[in-house]
Image (cartoon, rainbow, N blue to C red; front, side, top):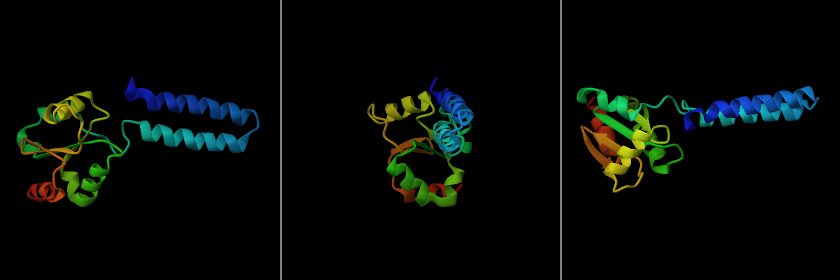
Length: 142
């Protein structure tokens, strides 16, 4: 259900926008339409790009997943890691734990039941909130 909330927001907001527009309230309709698009985009599964799924990443050969970053939107430490990695960060597999129950369960399993992110798996070994230089160094070797 939570994967489809963005669609529900888009439909409900679109309907309300049309009702306002038909009632002659053009400016509120435009504002509501813009708000609807922004809310739908932020809550969509593709916010900040499509996130890999934990099950799909685990199924890959080890050579194809030297660095897997488990993250979530709004996390200061995740944003710091992403900024520090820059373009080399594209070489990692990024898994949004808010989009994937399997990812949340994995992160809890390696963090004493806590959903601590970023949790970065480097060559099969999980690291909780590792130093960005450690992650960058491994990604540069890829």
